[in-house]
Length: 210
Figure 1 (tube, rainbow, N blue to C red):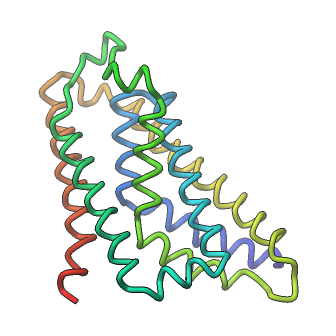
Figure 2 (figure 1 turned 90 degrees about the vertical axis):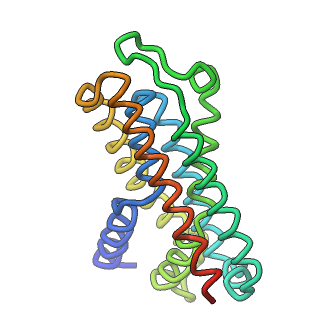
């Protein structure tokens, strides 16, 4: 690809990743409740999951998944179920005083939980798979070796992805004093939980309407 094509790819990926969605909301929620350092584990989970989707899209596996409606419906079901589960979990989550620097003990002792949540939110999103499956082939040339092309595209998207999502988490970390107090934070958790539920419902409804 030439520089213009790289620039086009960068713009499209940036617009995709910066747009509101479950992964963005989770990064903001993690930054607010756990701080940017722990939220970074979630950002890594998002980035790695998205890279896996890109690699799948670069192979015939994506074509197979998208060709079988039943398999895509299963992915949608699990993705929607996980978003609903996460919504209920956040809605019911306990709140700790920000001033004490103490958050959920289980999360603080196991950053892996933050990583895993973010990984599943991104990897079980069929819309992301459909998007990258349509996008990636437009920037890959059959006369050029595949691996170097995919490697460069993955590196570009990973850098953009981490920068955008970590920025969301860092801004939420800085802005957490705006909703200090248990009642305000409980209200934010409830709003976030309901939003995740709505994301999950919106993901599964088209499957029942077809």
